[in-house]
Image (cartoon, rainbow, N blue to C red; front, side, top):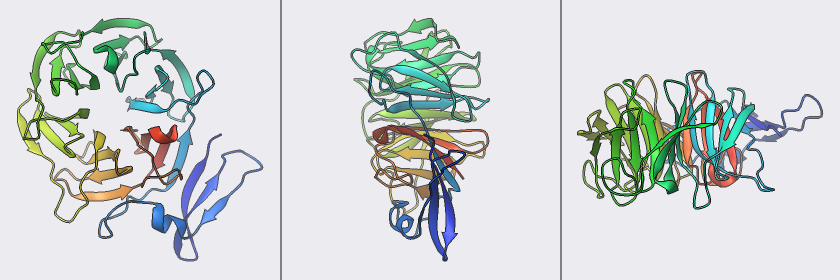
Length: 325
């Protein structure tokens, strides 16, 4: 069932209308005050991220249970790629219709987290617990794999994030023994690495998400509650600083950089979506811990479609949430 939640003004108060998305026999509930208290966890002085509509996308059942989404990405055609905790790759179109799905080569010891569409149409997955990168053809057949368990160049311990640069090179973040980002050719040949375990500039405690923008690599440093920025060859450039008085990031787990340099970041602990300017100013926040349509529970990932819609892997609630600004 597809549920839709759109914001309305009722009696001068901000509320929301909920529909089951069916052409007839729909039900509606209007909350006139509830959202004022639970719609967003933030400082009173910080702006609320204006969301016009909230929808949920269905995750198909697997072996009589409802899986939860973990990894999330989209491509230029707004196809949406999802990794779930049943060890599957799910491919949706831009309307939320499931087009195809397939299983990872193995998931008996754990499920992957990072996924991206490559420029040649293939799909790359950071196969976290198998310490490798798996590249699929569009039909779900395995095309190639690279990497093995270890700390050497081209090896991994729990790779968790993957992204492709304009020149075709791949960046893979891992949170195991080395806490680093490695750069590869699209064929899996090692180029360089940067980062180590720690709290100082250029160091990581779980680099769980990354995105490429211009000549920079943006990395979410989850346990250090920050976003760091590096050059394409791994030189530390800066840490995105939120202004004094803003609520700090709370276990940020992934991010997307928009064409104008603004940054969407999903915060796992705070259970909210935050929009930052390029210099770190908080432009808006949405969400709080909970089960309601305006809330998240342990969200892991996000992606942004070309029309501005944001999709959130609301992992603890076993759903994909679509936010329409």
